[in-house]
Image 1 (cartoon, rainbow, N blue to C red):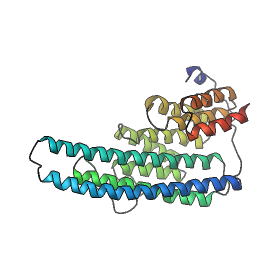
Image 2: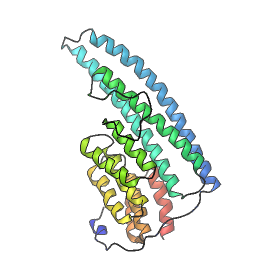
Image 3: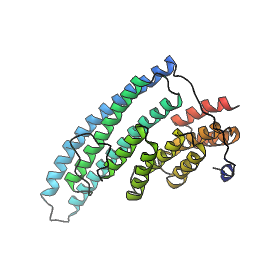
Length: 282
């Protein structure tokens, strides 16, 4: 992305997008939430299959734990592959939920209470699935991890990777932008290689966006784009950068960003939203 777009003077007045959610938009949101819930149900069914297979593999491996034969190494490799697939599914499903969150935020403060309630329920289900994954890893001894709690995560970080991330996200969802930023920053410092590090940086940027501090948000979104170029939050970061420039009245820069998003990630939901936004900037 061109560097010159950041060499601008910060303007004093911030343009704020407003509007209400139409009946059609609400129907679309609810349909998407129901679709996500169906995906999550399929995900849970596959998790049960993983559990059965992992238990079988684990029983076979523990019977030969003292040996270094090729068969044992292959078994461990297979289990690791299964867990990698499990993680990928969680990341994809989480990304879809976060996209829906953005759509709700974008459409203003209309009558979205029902959709938001469904979204929180689905988000909680994904969090519990993640805890389940960590329990499996701990059981198999593949990665050092904290023992997951039997209850839903609280707002207070428990020191584990998932606990710290969930606590920070909860603060953000509850409107505590400053507290969320602090926790996300601590999370990134503590777990720099976490698969959620790019998400944490994105939410740091988003906390500034929610405060209408668009200049700072633009710079923080840029960190997502540069530091986590291979992550799944880059399209969303580009989209929010475009919106931030538009809110500042910098329509030219907004168009540059949105066109770059469409060019690099043409098949994403963010690209679709970018095309719609471009029509309002002409």
